[in-house]
Image 1 (cartoon, rainbow, N blue to C red):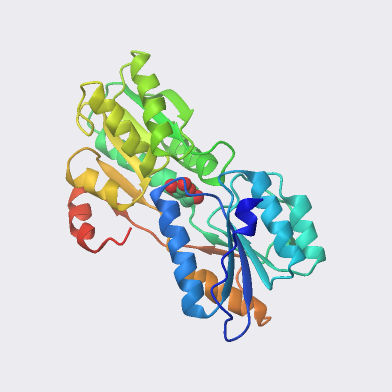
Image 2: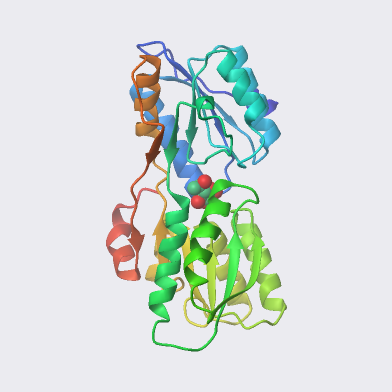
Length: 306
Ligand code: GYE
């Protein structure tokens, strides 16, 4: 409950709009950039932001949302840690006539009236972009490619969808084999720990697909400590595009990064204003993103803000 009470108002905005935002946690570089973007753009937009960090726990998010309902905020936004289990609290918000914006991650609720819009990436597409790079990289080889997969938080939209997008494409060619797949909870520490376990199982691994950069960065440490060369002995592709992963690309320790844009704040604040003013908004807003080869990473790094 401490995290809920720690909501930080950013002063009284011109329109007097209050947004209650429940963040997943601070598990990755992506998340830190996302939080910063939301806090900065609330300030710029003159929106009074109540912010709570759920420390990757759904129960904390539900508590935060209930407290926002009690405080009668104008709009509630949250990035759901997992996809399922939201119907009850979303119905409570609906009954209280407080519009909800899903930010970054989706819920599996069947009732579309539970939220006004969902702003975020297409995670299936990101998984497919990673797979397409793998397919292109091995297009001239008939040998088996042993793939290890570091999954994101179990039950989260990005973990479910990135896995699906990736396997949908690579499963078309039997030479690609996912020989190990486990969650690393989107963190560096877990990514390292799980990669150590993969390497200790003595399975030959040709390629690592990590659902986010932080897990890949943790895995790079594990691979180096095992006396192998990341990016060469084991090729690595991950998703997000944070500064440290672009640096790993430039250093030859990673091979490809699929971008996922964390800078959702400005679009979110626009949506909050529109919704409060009763203007119509699209029910799904997909963010645009790119991919990075080492050359593209070198060009992007100097101006990369996160
Ligand atoms: O890829 C990961 C973060 O939901 C898109 O969450 C987000 C993911 C992101 O922890 O780094």
